[in-house]
Length: 322
Length: 305
Image (cartoon, rainbow over all chains, first blue to last red; front, side, top):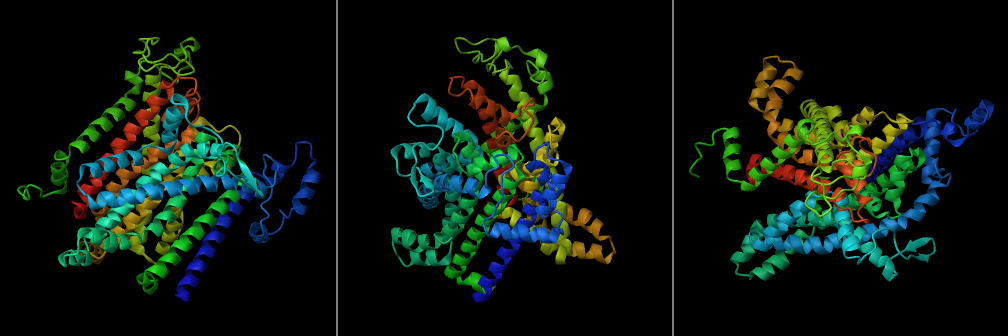
């Protein structure tokens, strides 16, 4: 077990080093950092002085080392566009994205898991088939189109819900939350649903196929043969083993949610990290892009690591094989 | 099974299954119509939306022809520039399909060649490539495509040339989708390379390149076709999303995603048709490609039957 953990940890460190190398290459070679920082009127001598002051003439390996050290200590540098420190920019945007992501993850699990179980148990029922057809549409309709349709229905036609921004926020320290006001919740409903729809279908399909797999195993057949009633077999024997992959699902979902929050935030003008990233692409704000890349990679690596370790705790076969 | 004998070859088997799936038939019909409409846009579209002289600002924001204030010239209405929406949709679908097909072709050629090589040669090349694939697979395709797009914008500063923008978009989507092809090709190659016909070819002294291309490739096409069909829908979706976000195709050549983005600006003022019709076209296109992909996957995978 310890060697397994150590190996996974080492792998994660390598991935992060690889990603930071990409981010460094981006920062250093896509466009000239000095030209971005100074105005037209700065003389060439001043530029050269600044260049050597910032250490841009050092060997590349030294520069890369400094880049990694800065990242690790939270020195993210400044945005080309707004001239603000990137750390502050991201920190002010982080709560919005996390709250949106958390609520849609909740929606996807609360709707997806029961629907998956139901469609697996009633395999050829009318309702099951209807749900399955609906999920095929859910997978196919792009996130932004779902958002637009929701805005058109609930925002424009019915006028029930706000369609952009976070609404009223409450500050707890630096963390601005909209989970404590009614207005904030109302603003959250449409974006969270938009982001959740795809995740619901994903959860449902995974749970369904897992449950079907479990129902086919010998111990379920044996339990049925012993005369235990179906309720107990389904909800006690089968469900327990179906729930193991839920950990993977949450891990997977989180990735999807982070990625698609970019789209959702753009549709609803939700002031989160996705919108920040999108702006950095539009205005070629390389430092923000490279920090975002590193941050996202870190989130992914940590989640994957946690999923793998939890799996090893729950399922001894992984430990032995790994 | 009455027709076991009839189902001797894969082609017959596919046809046999296809004739029993009305949903797949409908999907094929719809997809064919859309693709035909898109690629014949030059001839069947009422106007040319790329030709600035062909439309008039006076005709802007006209609702669809069947509504009270509609105009018979514009069946689906017009957009903010006075462009005929039907024509814009046909040309937009053409661009969406073109980018989707090219990027998936790029992804499949890249992924399959890397996958076969990794599977056949094994060793260090295999280890490195699959490690990269694993890392990339943990990032959703949309994120990868956005990043590549952003980097390209940094590398070619200033106003990016229109054609270059489309090439960058295609490459970005292609590079974000090659992993599935590589993994599938590699796994199938692992199975095939231990079979007798490959060993025979090796004993005959055939060049490894020849073995990979002539012996192995034709035998792993089945699973690759499935990925091709499923990922085509993903590619179209990615293009639409990037264009919707404003980092995709150039603005003067709107794809379906661009049209939807333009349309959202008019959602609140009641001009619903500008956003609804391109959205519906996009949905129908993706749903039908998805259904076909699902059909292929089920048909080519005997375990699921």
